[in-house]
Image (cartoon, rainbow, N blue to C red; front, side, top):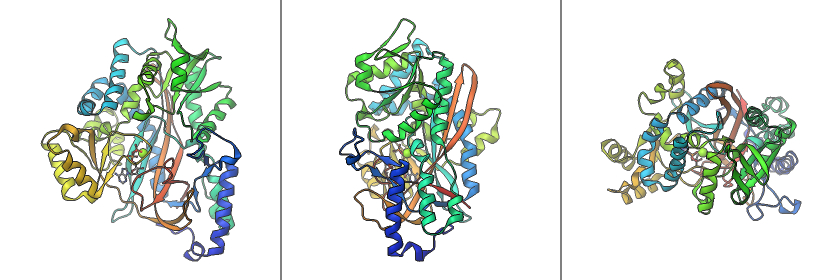
Amino acid sequence: MEQLIPEEVLTNATVIENLVAVAKDAALQHGVLMRIQEAPNSSEVRSNNTFTNNFFPLPVPEALYNQALSLQKHFNTLVDRISQDSEFLKEALASTIEVDDFTSRLFKIHQQVLEEGRSSSITMGLNRSDYMMDQRDDGPVLKQIEINTIAASFGGLSTHTPEVHRKTLHLVGRFKESQRILDNNVAAGLAGGLAKAWELYGSEKAVVMFLVEDKQRNIFDQRCVEYELWKRNVPTTRKRFDVVYKTGSLDQDKKLFVDGLEVAVVYFRNGYMPDQYVSEQSWETRLMMERSKAVKCPDISTHLTGTKKVQQVLAKPGVVERFFPEQPEVAQQIRATFAGLYTLDQGPEGDKAEAMALAEPERFVLKPQREGGGGNNIYGKDIVEVLQGLKGSTGRMAYILMDKIQPVPSKNYLLRRDNPVKMSNCLSELGVYGAYVRHGKDMVMNQCVGHLLRTKSNEDTDGGVAAGVAVLDNPVLF
Ligand code: ADP
Ligand code: MG
C-alpha cells in the first residue's frame, strides 16, 4: 500500500502535537462530532463533544474505489428486487425466524402488511454497502462485509471529514495531497432520495419524520441530512418511538399523523436493534407505521433484506443470478465482491461449515442476526466456544459463518476520546451509499451518493464509530 506520509513525519513528536491540536479543532469546527455517552441528549458546549478522526487519509487504489461506486446502483436494484420477493424472503429466513426472536417479530409485521396489501406505491431505500480490501498475492480485492438497509449512518458526518484531513495534510506540507481529498456530499444525496419520496407523496404540509433513538448521540450526523431537506423546502420532524405511540394514529385512508402532523416519509434512524423496542408499545408503533400510507425508509421488507441470513443465502450458487435474469454480467460483478459465506442451519451443509470453523477458527467470523453497534461478531477461539456450546441444538441457526477478510494494515494515529494518541496499525472499511426511489414499477431514482471510510486499530476486531472503536477517515486515490 502506498505510504502517504513519510515515517520521519509520523514519528516526530512536535509535529504530532501540532497535528493533535489541528485535527481536534478542525473536527470541532467542521462538525465531525458525536455527543458524548454521558450526555447523549445535550448539545451544550460544555458537554465536550467527542471528536472522531485520525490524522491522515488512507491511500486507496482508484480501481477498487471506482468498482465499489459503480456497483452501488446494482446493489440498490438487488435490494429493491429482493424486498419485493416475499417467497424468497420467507424461504431465506425460515430457519432464522425459528430461533431468532427479533427477526421473527419483524417477519410477522412483514407478513401482516403483505396480507393487508401495501398502502403505498412509493418505495425507497438509503443503503450502504461496506467493503474491505482483502489482501491477495496479486494485490487487494474488494470484498463486501455487509449491506445496511436501515439507519445506515455517518453519511452526514462524512460530508465534513474531507475538510479535516485537508488541514492536517496542509500542516505537514502535503499541499498536493491535500487537494486530492475528494469532496463527498453524502448528506445531499441521502436528502435527495427522501425529498423525491416526499414529493411523490404529494402533500406540501406533510413532513419527513426521523424516527430517532431515546439517546441521540449521533444527532449531528442526522442534522446534516435534515438541513439538506430544509434547503429543498421539505419540512421535517424528529420523533421517538414513545412519542409516535402516544400521539400517532392512522386515519381511514391509512394516512399517518403524529403530533398533529401528516407524515409523508418515515426515515428510520432507530428500530434496527432488539433493545430499541423497549416495550410492546414500540412494536405496536412499528406496525402502525408499516401499515400506513407514509413512505417508509426502509419498509419492513427492505429492512429484512439487509439481514445477514439473506446475505448468506444470496451467496449460494445461482441465487443472486436469479435477480438479474437479463443481466448476467451484473450478477457476476456483484458476486465477485462476495466473501465465502456459509449456512449453519441443521443438516450436512451446516455441519460441514461448523467443522471447518472448529478446525481453523482464525479464518472465519461467526455472525449472529444482529445489526449495528458492533460487538456482536465472534472471532477466533470464541468461535470454538460458541459452536461447541450450541452443539446439537437449533441455536446454531441463529448464526452464519463468513470468511475473515484480511486487509493490509496501514499506519496512522487514531484520535479517540480518552485514548492516548499513539501510532497504530490500522484496518479500514469502505462504505458506499445508495439512494433509490421506486414509484409503482418505475425506478424514478437510483444513484450512488458518496462514500464512507472508517478506520480502526487492528487490535480491535469489531465495533464501529459509534462504539468509539473506529474513526472517520478519507480515501486518497492512487
Ligand atoms: P454490524 O451489523 O454489526 O455492523 P458487520 O457485518 O458490519 O455487522 O460487522 C461488524 C464489523 O466486524 C465490521 O465493520 C468489520 O470491521 C468486522 N467484520 C465483519 N465481517 C468481517 C469479515 N468477514 N472479515 C473481517 N472483518 C469483518
Ligand atoms: Mg456493519
